[in-house]
Length: 147
Length: 161
Image (tube, rainbow over all chains, first blue to last red; front, side, top):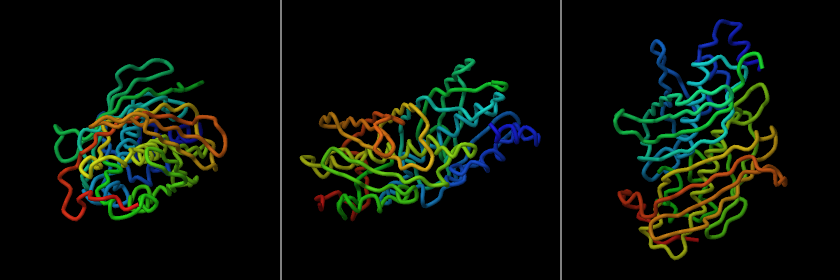
């Protein structure tokens, strides 16, 4: 995979902001990454086009799902050297609260990291870390470097 | 619990519905077919939706968003009280079978296969063009009678079809 190889060649193998910058859909959603040491928090700043329900208003369920999927995939890329972007096999999203028109944050934990498949859990919240708006768990196909 | 909550739906017809959802409009989702409990939407390919710049394949999250949107629209409205028509997504599970082919439209078909007093069960599938090859499939559950705190003026009264 050219993208990841190029980033590694530039010494940006763990620079997830540089990676997101090169993925059109990440730019479309406006996803950012906040790195503190070896901890990543994904950030989805609010934008009008992320709204799904103008009456409430509330974020579109799809934007929250996509954000959680990015959160999981980026965490995987951060934790392991990979030849390609992880491929989602399945993802299951639980919606707990409606997403308000403010910034959303996401974190992921790799529950099980096999050679070819990883199981990842991710959660999203807004102003209050203890009041999650959605959680997700999914399986991702991996391509270890050299394959 | 964020998508096709039908607060505001009462204000316009189902065919205009997508144009009232900012994120659906931003993605470029179009309604192709609709009857109560069933809908088909189309998503034209666009560069901004790409998840893998090396291959031009759209991101899985795009498919998630369209499946979510179509599933919410497939929740039946006939025979439901105005209060019940406000829906919230409880969960959505998606299986990705194969990457979407770049430069082809994505077609999502959603149907509600079971409904109880408080929950609607919807399955959806994503294909491309006239191919029957599955790109992804999903199952979702929706709570009926949610979002009761809708602001005045969006009181879910009477669907204008």
